[in-house]
Length: 164
Ligand SMILES: [Zn+2]
Image (cartoon, rainbow, N blue to C red; front, top):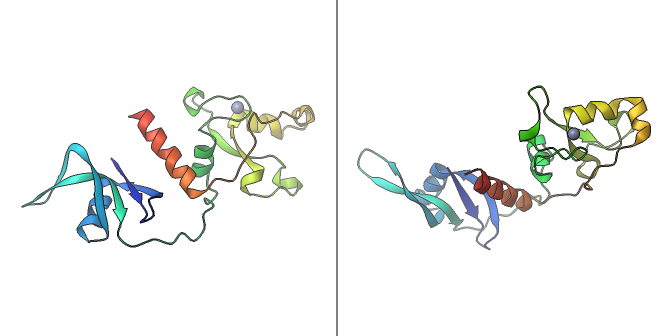
């Protein structure tokens, strides 16, 4: 169960475990906005509602608005779909997995940066590595973009909502 943390300005910052949201509240660092209906945390003497969202009391400065490039973030940006064949992670077969694919290969000086990376299933990634296939130049179905941290928080939320 997750809790969305809002900054004082109302922008969503991150998702944390609901218990962490409760701890923020109990330490006086955040106000509870919404609780999870019917779910509580218990201590030996007390019962607390679990927060679904909290707002920080003190403004948190965001150092870098651009999300850190990790595979988790990359797959989230691309909706957990291979940009070449369009298959979702759920549609991959047992041995396949999502990978980070460099549009300009690293061996040719391509950067490990947001605008040069896309989500590719391992099959498409291997196929692209192959010289002959490279001559065919498969184009990704969507262009890479630079996500802000906030974009990913919202995507993760939407994802959690569709899974639930
Ligand atoms: Zn693919």
